[in-house]
Image 1 (cartoon, one colour):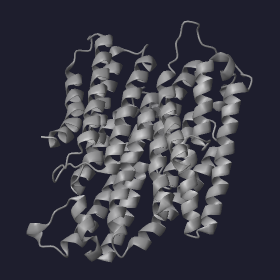
Image 2: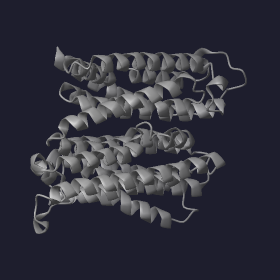
Image 3: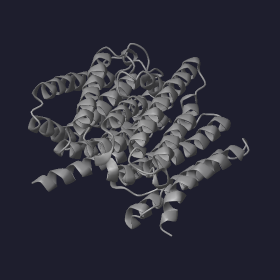
Image 4: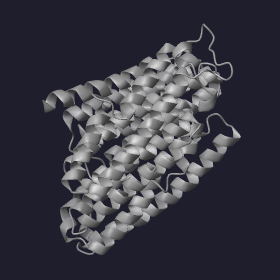
Length: 468
């Protein structure tokens, strides 16, 4: 009976999403938003039930520690994004709001399926589904640049998913060589069970193609080029979901295959591959962030950096893997908060350009506060969670005697920290070159951002107290 919860948490948003398309355009805006809030709360409730009961699952869906944590994270971020979306779209046409909510529901369902998928083929289908249902969200504003970003996202991610499918084929081939076809099971647990006996060459090829394929969706360099465009053009709460939730789903695909490889004779090869891609992603992000004049693209490149940190820590293993889990959670909480805050900045400055922003501390103190706290948390300021995640990853790298990799990581982290802090200072205090005021009666939402930052802070304090 409990296993029905696994199916319900996926089926609920998918079903509501399809039904929403049938709602008449002239349906009351307020009622549609109430429906969205109700679905988000129901999904979070189902997720909490799953975490409490921990159903065993079946050959298609199952509960796992990392999958359950990501599902809770996705559900929480979705609820906050839906709340913020109401304020963000208060002056939009009802048709636009309806379509955006419908695609959001489908997006939530696809990501939920990704976190719970037990069958490797079902996981691939779920990842592909996340691409198809999130693409219309990037095109919400229906501008020329958003259309270009949408097509770039679809084409690059679809090519990446095709590479991932080929990688999955190689992994399946490695298992098929040692098992009779009639007994072949494509569940992740079965792959891990037989990993020590699986063919090393097929596994290495599989990991390479999976890393390139799912790495494209995750935003690892040099396959990351869709990410800055998509995050820049999507509505701010959608950018929050893309960065805070979707990238984690793609990483889960890499992690699941890497888990299989790690149990085999190809484990050392897989670790070196992830460390290399991780450092390369951080390097690319550093280069592009230094001279960036679009604050949404700046945060997008920051996501490339943080996905690189996660790949780097995963390759190191040991205590660094603890840091990876912490980093996944806190990057999602903090980056989602910051992307929602950019929605406020857009309403204040009417521009995404940093050079046309300034005096935020005077214009809107609430937005200034969440921006300042969010950036401080993002660069690893204590006691926020990213401070501990980076610390664990650095300790893990030093314990593995990765001296030059650790040094390079620290130098790039310092450059990115200075870049983000200088941009925050400019937006907050630099004199405006043109008018950038808001009308007195306009309310800009900040409490969803504060809630996410508070979650990160409380978890950070928990880590701190636990280590004393």
